[in-house]
Length: 295
Length: 344
Image 1: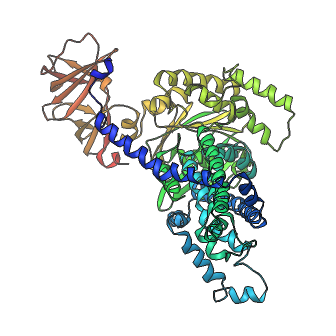
Image 2 (image 1 turned 120 degrees about the vertical axis):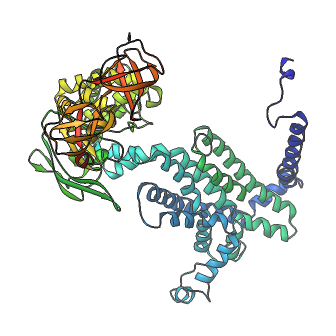
């Protein structure tokens, strides 16, 4: 009761508080919770049998496989790229360092469909390397390589972006200390650098994986949407939907949603360990936010 | 091990951080590199360690030219300003790191025995299982020292070793570092911007300014015979008064001081607050008290001379004096430098 007598803190007026909370909660319910609920409900609307049949459908199974394979290739490659880029940017001084930072971020700000179209121009039949590739009988577009490349483009910044602020804050002291104690470059990397960024690295990998599995725009341009051959799970959902197989579409979508939920749990767990926004230099916050709004 | 720097030069982009520094560090010596920020002292330390490469000149460890030996193989123990302890390893693992990664293979039991010895040496027995985040700043500093000593370095290098600590911890650790040094007899080089620390701890002090050595010598030598105005003012509070030298005497507007070796012309007189006396009557430089600051061991008078020069002087605690009192300042000791030379 004594609390009531206290004057409200700045921006803490009861009416303002209630209005703000109401707006935020309503929007969250309408924009985020309701659609997810609809997916869950619709997926099982025709009964568990239809759900299982959709999952068991060879095309759906192929789409799931393709998505997993794409992630298995794109995520490790981008992890290595991210670590290398973060290391280069934070531990070396070189010309064009700021420029490289900006270039790495381009996929964040560009529409994925632009990336897809760009790959079309580079590897397509009328494109830069198209004729040469055709002559060598190498299929990039409308095949797994194209899908992987497009996914990699879209998710290139995720790992690097998580590591750079952390490694910048840590500076070079630890590596210098390890080297002065006689450690080799590899030893320094694996026993000093990597353990100190491990949570941020995992966090980046989780975000990267979520995006690779969910990527639609870029992949839809380069994959050619061939059912049972080049359809990833998001593309397959769209295809089912256009075929008026609503229950199937929702069932497939529910798998994607499930993957997202798993990712979310992994993310929360990692944040508890100090990765992500929690307990890290503020300069990283806007980028992390941006990554999430884009997702 | 004796360390010798021969005309060492370092330039960052266009900024020349170190200009041809030559320096001999005797085996077993404890030497301080003292200077204001930007004087190149840390750069010199990092070049001795091999963390920076010299653009010119040579660094010798004993008779061996170490200039191009990479830091990994140079065999130095480096204590970083912020310790750079590995946060994901315990204190014991931190100390053992150098022995584990060494090209010289050691038995596990041997390493843990050595870690135990080092923990005892730095008086951290029982803290081996803690993580760096769970111990105090002073303890971290001692872990950093133990870690550096674990690899039996030829030389111990410390970058602002007490910079990040409280004043009281700092004084204790300083004395303690001196004890460790006397016990181990390892050649030690440390960097500081705190003259008290350098004078308290070092056998010999090297004073640097703008990438050059200004003066080097024992604490007694640099305190009693500073060779330039820079050294005088860097080593402690000093009042500066303009004077005119004429045939071996410096004239301070009425007060005369002996200046036997100085050429005629304008000069500057440097006066330590403790080298001045205050009297309410008598002779000396007439002055008015602006303010009195009381300290545990003395009273400091801020005064203004009749020629409008500010003076600070330390007088015994029992001196009766207050604001706006008029009196006279007597000079017990002074350092006089010709104006032309004082710029150096």
